[in-house]
Image (cartoon, rainbow, N blue to C red; front, top):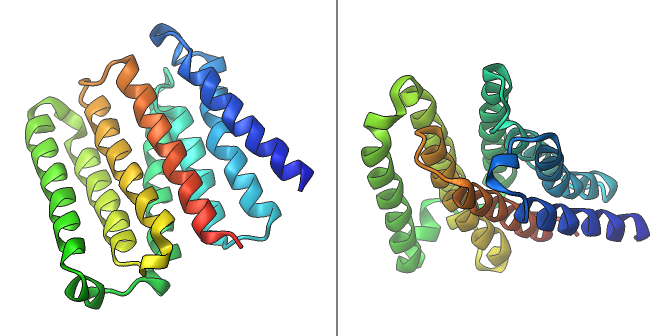
Length: 211
């Protein structure tokens, strides 16, 4: 328990450290380490508490992927996007067995409104960013589909998974901002907001899935 509390403190400290980093230093070693430790601490907590393997994988992949997004090497950035995509697919695999499927949307029309809002958000964002994505069009589209699959799964969860549903909303907002960054339309404040949203979303997902 003491170790887990220490890891939560590390995650909070990393969030503060990255939050006060100047925009020109967000790709530096300290900022990359802060991004890695923030969500990485949650992955360690999941592993220590014998959490679902897909949860640990989703958190670890998100931690590594998010840390590499602003790396100077194109190979490292590609690995970062691959990590984030793996995290979203692991999230789908984690939640799919407990989601209500189409019946959940039929029973509660509010879920349909939320799904429509997410679909509209991704559609408008991709339409606006499409000319600016250049050679990254395929990557942006693939990541958008993986993100939409993840939030679709969370919206179909039973109501008592409200933390996971809220976490899914944070993650999809962060994903749209990340694709804006891929198109070169995100400043330093936007990058910090995207990471904070990923951290909050990951923390809510972990709280919902860990006993």
